[in-house]
Amino acid sequence: MILIGQYDSPFVRRVGIALTLYGMAFEHRPWSSFGDADLLRALNPLTRVPTLVLDDGFVLVDSHMILDYLDGLVDQPLFPRTEPARHRALKVAALGCGLADKAVSLFYERAMHEVISPAFDARCRAQIHAVLHALEADLASRPGPYWFGDKLGHADIALACAMRFLREAHPGVMADLDFPTLIAFADRLEQTAVFAQISQPFLPPA
Image: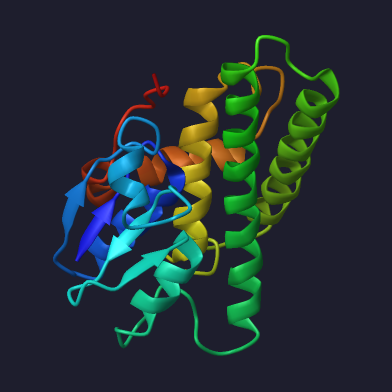
């Protein structure tokens, strides 16, 4: 398989981490959706990452869909297969990915417009803060080392990847806020071998 996209994207990174944890061989092509747009568009008309090219040439897009496919190939997926554990993990992962999505949107608003919309900026910041508060309270109430016990899962990975992007792309957004549980959790995962391997400092697109 071929995973396309740079690891400073929280969405590409969560797929790369899952592939590595699953022990699935893949080639990584760190294409940018800006600098390598023509190459990427030939595979994915959305010109977005992550894009995953399967062994037979079929192309999957969107991190959720890619991970759903990968989960179907293994006996012990990183999302639970049974309820209620499944929908509870899906909610946390969705909030983590939503956090990343808002952080990406806020970055592009600031980077690509000379005049920033105050209303859009404030809305993104409010959404980011609301998700952080909700996740901080949720995680603080859980006894295990991971969100759902003693096993790393997609929910943990999504949140940690989102936190890395948020903190590097918007260091000022969290400066006046305190989320000790989330920060300690994300820092602990960043110190693990797989997070260190599938990693890249944030590089603003040129």
